[in-house]
Image 1 (cartoon, rainbow, N blue to C red):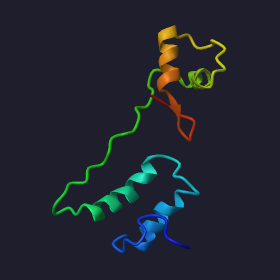
Image 2 (cartoon, helix red, strand yellow):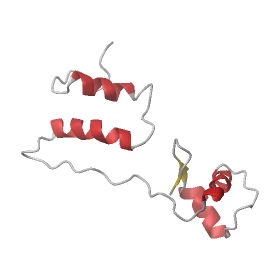
Image 3 (tube, one colour):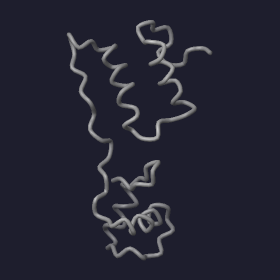
Image 4 (tube, helix red, strand yellow):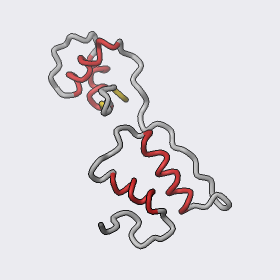
Length: 110
């Protein structure tokens, strides 16, 4: 199979290249599964004797303001099928629509 990631760069180990290339057909289920391979890749490209590779913070904060039973109501708001079962004001409802996303496990993030 031809290389698709860092083509022609022999400094990238075969297993690391293969793992990152696999994301094209089988994306990681969470952002946490990307950190190890990306950290390894960046440490190769930016050697520790000259650079500091620092882990990134979460891409989005976990939404802490809902009870578990409100998750379905929040998803309905996000998808535009809101039946107004969740008691939120219009400003918060707009904020949910604008900023929220749902991860692959069904969690709601802002």
